[in-house]
Amino acid sequence: MKEQGLFRRSWGLAWQRLLERTVLRRPLAHMYHLISGHIYFQTLSAAVQLDLFTLLGRRGPLTRAQIGEALQLAEQPARILLLGLVTCELLRRRGAAYAATPLADELFNRDRPRNVADVVLWQHFINYRALGHFHEALLANRNTGLAEFPGDEPTLYQRLAHNPALEKIFQDAMEAISRLSNHLLAEAVDFNQFHHIVDVGGGNATNIIRLAQQHPQLKADVFDFPSVCAIAREKIRAAGLGDRLGAAEGNCFADEFPAGVDGILFCHFLTIWSPEQNRALLQKACRALAPGGAVIIFNQMQHDAEDGPLSAAMGSPYFLTLATGVGMLYTWNEYEAWLRAAGCTRVLRKALVRDHGVIIGIK
Ligand SMILES: C[S@@+](CC[C@H](N)C(=O)[O-])C[C@H]1O[C@@H](n2cnc3c(N)ncnc32)[C@H](O)[C@@H]1O
Image (cartoon, rainbow, N blue to C red):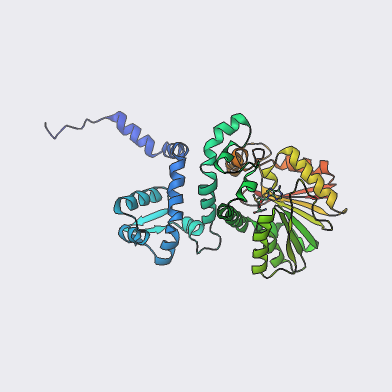
């Protein structure tokens, strides 16, 4: 066989190559994301579980051999992981050394104050397998993904109470999400006008701790399940705020909200429930308030045009498939209509960043 002329000159191939490197580059990458999303996620998840981003943050750019040695990875697995992380733009390769990209360092290096490494662990250990039931959940119209967790209760939150290790992963992730967003709430709403608020489904108290640190007059209670209140009390004690903050045990459907408060906060909470349940919760909240009191809703909002954003589209399947089987990220208009129907005379909205918004209903 002659070496010369073994490759044919093909204008068709050259044209296709040009297209794939230019106008088709982004659409093709997008399709890869869709078809192989599970591999993208597992690439990130493995790096977070190995704590690679913290390692790189502490020791600076490292070669593949140094990373393999520090993480106890054999040569070929290290090569596969690093190839994935570089092409996902989580790491950058300069010569033989690897470093995290600035955004990956900010988000996944545990030494960074607003890192979301715990959110990745939540996605991995709690949501990942359960979301494999999405198709089934759509057809059944219920949270069939809950079968991944032992128990017979109807919501993920109740089943997590049987498993302290998973409940901790869940609450740590919620804390990371709250840390990323609760300063938006603190900046957007004038909490100087409130004396005592209750944070329904307030989890481990991250939100009320942040608000109380900024507003020395403010008293606040988390209202959540007993196992979660125990975690909240510990956090409150560690923050030295036991004189103004507390945790009230209860089930928002079975129990009344604590009385005598002038603000009732729902942070990342109404997304969990159905429209009917949300109407009932907001009515209960309005009943508990004196005239002039306020209901405050804070979470990511769906556009009123129902065409996004991505956070609403990607967050909603979790509520159908796993959390409760009935929730989703609702539109601004829906929350506002529920507040008016519950008896609020004035309803105000404010869009924040990262798809978050706050709606205040005044009784
Ligand atoms: C998505 S997390 C939100 C945590 C917190 N509000 C935040 O913004 O990070 C939902 C919280 O609601 C609590 N929860 C779920 N069902 C509840 C119920 N029926 N009554 C009271 N709390 C509940 C869960 O235990 C969990 O802490």
